[in-house]
Image 1 (cartoon, rainbow, N blue to C red):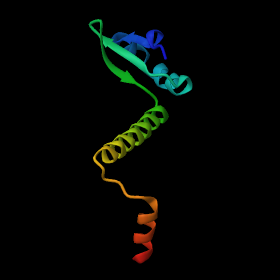
Image 2 (image 1 turned 135 degrees about the vertical axis):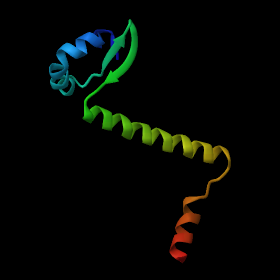
Image 3 (image 1 turned 180 degrees about the vertical axis):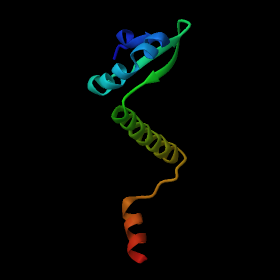
Length: 87
């Protein structure tokens, strides 16, 4: 995804804040705000933000699972089911 068309200076944000808020949700793309020519912040609509957070949580769980597998901390599904039935 190219964001080059979604880069604006902070002065644009100041002058067009309400328009930006209206259009962020429609486009589904983040807006990168620069200050003194350097990227400083990323604005995105709440739906995209929540989706990103959910994706990050899933990726963290997968990474944790992979580390547990590499460390040998695994059990077969049959062992887990047997242990649960014993409770």
